[in-house]
Length: 57
Image (cartoon, rainbow, N blue to C red; front, side):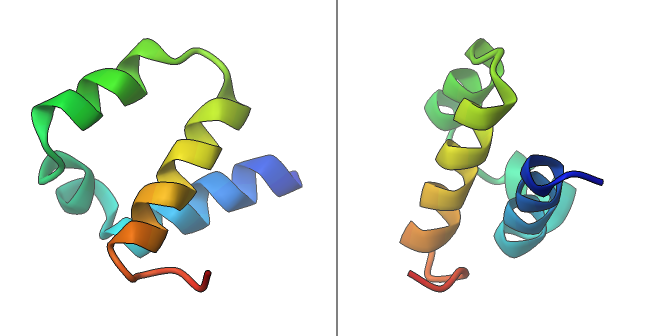
């Protein structure tokens, strides 16, 4: 697994996995679905996790 994929997995895990993603507001889920670039999605997920206080700043 490369670094970007690991960051993606870590961010999803920090948010709460599948259930955490499903609990996000619809606008946030739509914004994530609209992005094609994995790098962009990773950055967004990391920011979400940080805002939820579930990832180190």
